[in-house]
Amino acid sequence: MRFLHFETIDSTLSEAKRRAAVGDLDTLWISAVSQSEGRGRRGREWVSDHGNLYCTGLYLHHGELASAARLSFVAALAVAQTLEQYITPDLISIKWPNDVLVDGKKIAGILLESGTYEGEIWVAVGIGINLVSHPKLESYTATHLLAHISKDQLNSAEPIFTGAQPVLAILAQKFDFGCRLYTNEGFEPIRQAWLKRAVGIQGPVTARLANETIEGVAVGMDGEGALEVQISSGKIVKIHAGDVFFSSRVL
Image (tube, rainbow, N blue to C red; front, side, top):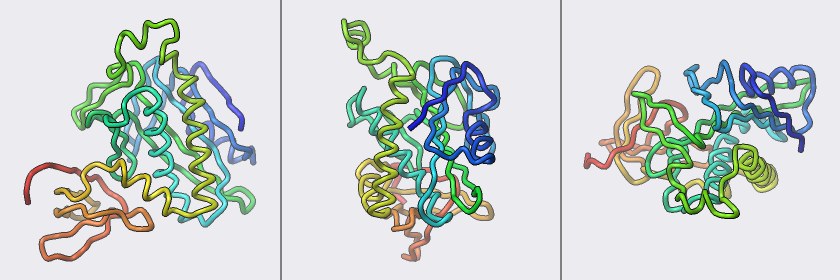
């Protein structure tokens, strides 16, 4: 596993794609202090303030291209498992498909892109984690890691948090383990670990898709990563992509 660090870059995901395009496909993690063109899902801007973690893992995918998308669940688990090294796991949850939350607030963003080079499939897994600050946005409530670590832990002789690069070292190890597990044993162990941390399952959900909005109860996630929603008729609808909103209200 290789690591490449920049002071500033357009985006670590863009750099990973550039390297994949020329066949530089040995496992690589790219990080940066800041990004000028950080991206989230659906082309949204990812605010890249100093002190937070901005990184992308570039991996060969030993499977079909369609199955590469499920590495987003591997990435969400890796982020959750990394945060568990710093704060109590009870605070950490995952909202379908890969939004990692701390105390119900978004702390990380994950974006996957994939392609092929001379017949080999590559996947670039872009990850941003709010470590020392978070943006104030209207679309969702965010948080950052230091907000959940006590001053005693930060100011001790051996402080629990020492910056973004140690967090990246843990994250890369956790993702690498999950990637190998997915390759060797399939999606089911990833699915089970994800469900243990999932928020909103067995509760009301609204899914806004490209051409319709679906309301119902989130009853689970299937073997391909689709969110299973039971609508008022009793039918199970599978959501493969879209914006989902969970609530505690009774339908």
